[in-house]
Image (tube, rainbow, N blue to C red; front, side):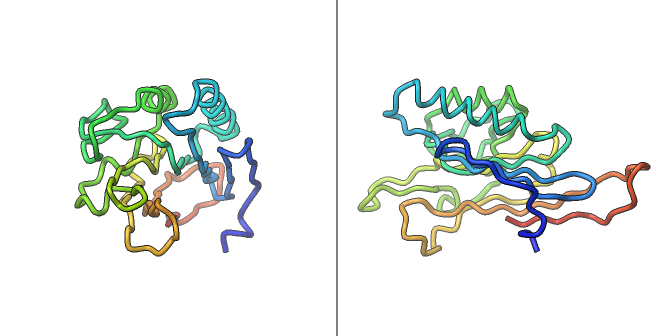
Length: 189
């Protein structure tokens, strides 16, 4: 049961939440975010990324880190180094988010998997006139191969204009001579 494995959680204002889940030999860190929208001022955006940096510094570099939530920025279909894959939606880039990901060795997971358009969009406008991909599941670059799938479920009844982004991962860990042997860990979120 996951609830017994939670080591702690920390909310940084109302936009960043870190949850640490105990594991052997490493812990799993999940950061849930809700970034300011495009019409927010630069101060709000700076505060958000400072809080995200603070949350990330609470995570050990060898531990898997998953960052998910609403970044309120589109990525587009152009591959950006090894950070953003070519399977995103729209044509706008969020330079600030991509720069942050590059600096922190994070990849934008749901842009690396080829999906039909209905499995890519994460938000629809009232009246369903516009659909965009603005919510993401990101993972530490070190654990990129652990992310097996990331897609949306637009048929989920969430009473929101956002749809869930779900992922599946399998983490294989090398044997550490200092720790007792463990089996493969599988996390599905």
